[in-house]
Length: 74
Image (cartoon, rainbow, N blue to C red):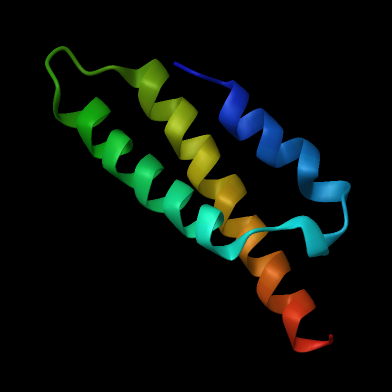
């Protein structure tokens, strides 16, 4: 599991929303959703990979929320 991706998104929570790329955020959401499904379907289930991508999915959704919220007031 590559915990660098969700950790980077989590560390960006305190940074200015101007740096958020909506296209990259959307791509990361799709990427993590696909790999969560893969981690669940593969036998034996890879729960570490699932947890990593679940964390990234949650972080990217929050970043997307921050971007949309910021874009409304700019």
